[in-house]
Length: 94
Image (cartoon, rainbow, N blue to C red; front, side, top):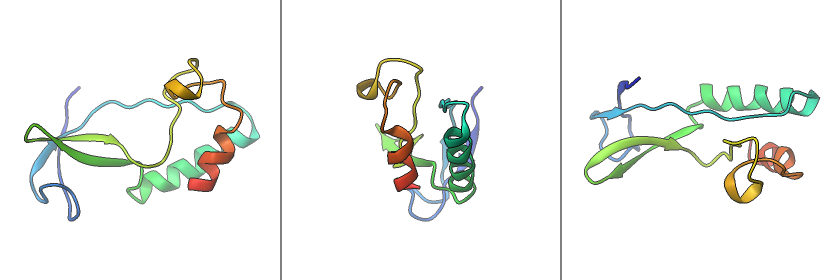
């Protein structure tokens, strides 16, 4: 599914359309994971989860500066688990 949105001040070309995307991240199903999910929701509502980058003259949505685990495996090097420090690190960023 492809969606188009309008960029805002601070984006590469404010007021111009850009393509949306599908993003998926994982958290553990425990108390720390649920606490982190609430903080990530708040960050999303404040517009901090994603950013717009210009690539070859086209604006695209990408992850922002908040780290997300996009895989259940592969470890820290591949944005996955296991990563014993992730919840602490993302909590500090949030």
